[in-house]
Amino acid sequence: MYLKTNQFHVEQFVYMLDRMKSIQEGGGTLLDHSMLLFCSNLFDGDRHQADEMPMILAGKGGGTLQTGRVLDYMQQPEEERRACNLYLSLMERMGLQTNRFGDADRPLKWL
Image (cartoon, rainbow, N blue to C red):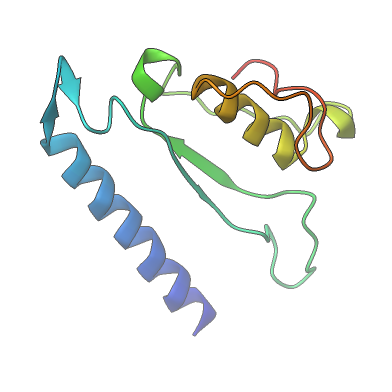
């Protein structure tokens, strides 16, 4: 049942991305001007650990995000690969400047 639930959620995410890609907005699409984060709090449901969280970031964030890449931060120090580092990075791209969010005090490198 867990697998089927996850598959349904991924299908819904893909459906939303496709719809957003089809909606023209300004000089691009709604997806071009958006950032959508799809993630799971578990990489391996049997281990129930959150140190390897799979995340998909879609959209171009109004041109602030480079797309078409797979980024692996597992070799980075823990303080530079927290989910909150990613959240800080996304907030910066939305124009919100803050020194800290959750357990992070710096944005994610190479995003």
